[in-house]
Length: 318
Image 1 (cartoon, helix red, strand yellow):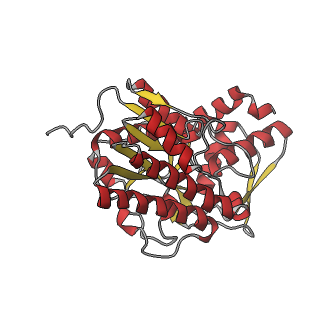
Image 2: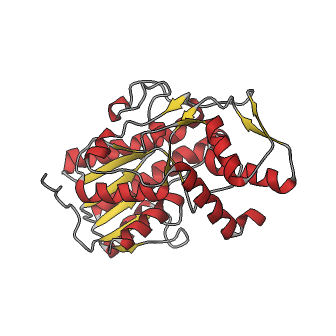
């Protein structure tokens, strides 16, 4: 089989926007391990919502490629409580970075979206063609709309300017560097913290939101980073690429796995007055598999790795 054409030079200079977050930090590690020069800029030095400042920075450093991993993110509670920044901050970041990259002559860009762009009741597993075929899940609609706008922006630069810009839609992610704040975190780190604190406090029961029946797919962030590198090197098409593992489980099953990892021995209860969100969200990852990608981190091992990282970080005792 003919190897795919390499779209990056061997030691490319790559700006990772959002390098301190869960996704950006993993992508930066992966690219550095492959011998690329990773360029970063902290929020205090560069506000990515500032279009003029972002363009000026990119014109100054002249990277070979940009990975747009910066975003305002969070779980159901955060999306419900703060819809304005989930929409407006993400729109501003995307407009600044993608437009700035083009103005600065950056030849390659990877925009990272989210699987929440797909309709709430999309056929499972969800193919890339399901985009804009039905209503979104209301609990994260502002964030999803912002990410759909980013995909449209990338496609626009491809269509109008022939830019080699691409989009990828990751599934639910977790791993070292995750956010464990119960008000703003996603489901998996929130579960880890809830069960850890139940063990610490000697509680006999953990009560979780919803029914426990929705099914979700989870990918370790190191596997995501490997997929991003592969796409940067080999993929050049306007269709966004799903990034996932192709397997899912119920929230109850996920909770039971986290329970076992943290050593909790009490009961798990569900508060069905709280929202479940989308009933099922499993990505069709056949497009990515055809490029040669396969995940390496089993879920239980990845949860244990994430839990141990959180304990080492000292945040668990704060």
